Image (cartoon, rainbow, N blue to C red):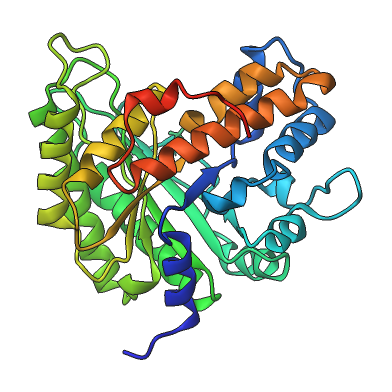
Length: 342
Ligand code: 13P
């Protein structure tokens, strides 16, 4: 198949040493994040926070793309430059979250299906006009002894593939994000088993719906012990189980796997990514598309105070740099203690 623009975009998003900033928190989620620093969530505080992240000097050395929320893609920097244009000028690719959230799945107690397909073709066209060149759709699955059901797994896989096909038709690279939530007391083996089923269904649907895998990226969970489990697996075991799962279920045509952080501490998310890459080379680029693990220290350092913007930017730059190092397998805990100076 000829090399297309979609392939170029997907490859640029996982260029050497670079990863993606997920800054697409919905209004509900960003309110929760701001609550942790006692800041009211208003259109202006949300704008100011995204402005801090996007204008961080030098972050573009480590950040290839940023996922925006609908409100954010329409907002401007203080000088009036639209955020997508500001990012483009730094060589950072603007992306957009297009799903409308996980909603209760009918007749499936405790499970969800992600909505947002109605009208998606028109929304993608509009987002492309605003500069978006990649998109994200997140499905979620809960692990218990019985869940997720096959019904939940296949319904979400079908929707993810419909979204991906519509994106490619619009000239937008779809990031497919099937997130197996790692809350609970499950073992790492159980996480492996569930993640395997989810990925097997996803790649069946993507194939059936004619999606060109070389113009997609996968954004999965890492395979972890449940956050409330006793005897949680260590870093090397996480790398073992995660790679075992992806080698079995992710076709080599996929250019990149960009992990979500999913509630891991920022340093755990970096250490796991590093251990996975230290065992490379792999058939795909393995990178990050972190939300909390890139932003948490920045949010805390900023605290909503205009005179702390630079402190917030230094914290964000540092996490971006640490995760860039983890792409090569050359990150080490000692690097964390180096001066957090830009
Ligand atoms: P976290 O890294 O905080 O899990 O966020 C990534 C994301 O985009 C979730 O959809």
